Amino acid sequence: MTDRYGVIGHPISHSKSPVIHRLFAAQTGEDISYEAFDIPEAQLEDRLRELVAAGMRGLNVTVPHKEHVARIVDQLTDRAHLAGAVNTVTIAADGRLDGDNTDGVGLLTDLSVNLGVALKGARILVLGAGGATRGIAPALLGSGPESLHIANRTVERARELAARFERLGMIRPCRFEDLAGQQYDIVINATSAGLKGELPPFPSAIIGPETICYDLAYAMTDTPFVAWASHHGARQAHQGWGMLVEQAAESFFIWRGVRPDTAPVREKLP
Image 1 (tube, rainbow, N blue to C red):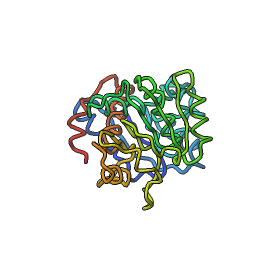
Image 2 (image 1 turned 60 degrees about the horizontal axis):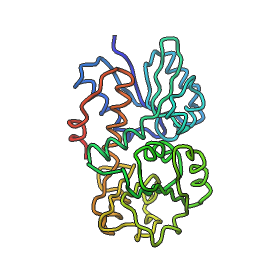
Image 3 (image 1 turned 120 degrees about the horizontal axis):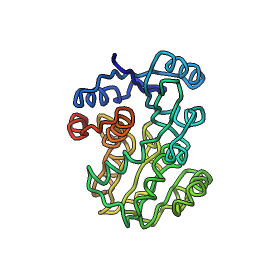
């Protein structure tokens, strides 16, 4: 009998997760199906119970539900607890929900393995202090950077993150306007800046000729951040397609105990 998996979010029509997991299934010979479920925030808990009752074996979780799901699952892994956010739910036979977060390992795998970016000793800047940053900050701290700065429109949210993760390492919080005059080896965009057509609100001076830029967002053409970084002379500017595939592979491994080869899947995406 085919095991059912899926992804929940709102909106969800843009999600490439069904395509990615179907490719993983075909490659590994695992007998699974994978669907996308558009669930408004107000319906989340009721719909989640319905999916469990329908026999789903696991779910990926995307915006805006990651933090809400972390509060309602029965058990969290250490990395999901640290992040306060869940992107992978395993549903046990008795209906118990186990929550995990594979965003951090997905980002690190794409940066260090696929793109060959050296994280140890790097000066890293993360733009934005929302849920996406909470998912990746512990992994970035664990990679041994020289420094990790988190900049946000309001410094209070960045300070909250610095306090949340202080036992893992030091995060320096600041506002976007405080970045003028500083340069970084790696700049990661974890905001939605530019997606509505406005210019990213970051000083271009953060980009030097050796800076590598990475956007957690992805699109069929350059995202506004990638276009902005390239225009200002970044050595490399990447979208988050690789992270998307790598975090999906980690979820697939959690569910099935089989680690798919991500290279042929990444080659099929922009």
